[in-house]
Image 1 (spheres, rainbow, N blue to C red):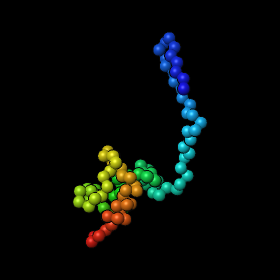
Image 2 (spheres, helix red, strand yellow):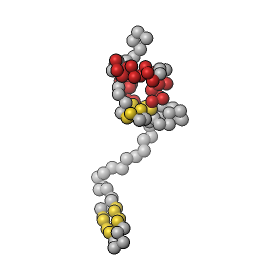
Image 3 (tube, one colour):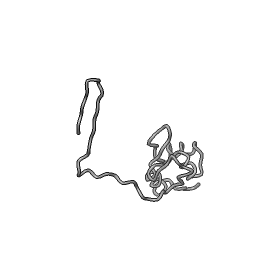
Image 4 (cartoon, one colour):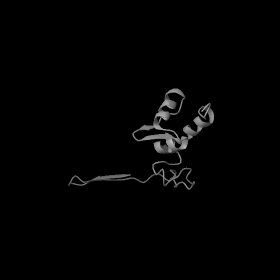
Length: 100
């Protein structure tokens, strides 16, 4: 790590991580979602439209599920995003489509 400042108030900073810090390699896992249709999603995050399409429901139904059936809260409010694993766990253990 180095820091320098010249007389013109220009500041320079550089950092090289230690050798024991592994660099993160890009994930080579195939996408578990339609990357063209849901470009805001990832293998770990579901966008709002993907959640709506996954359940074939409207926004008001998802809100009702959050209030009355334990559907996971989004991790961000604007724009809405859900953790994919939490949604899938809800489907498997709590949600499903009981009596619908």
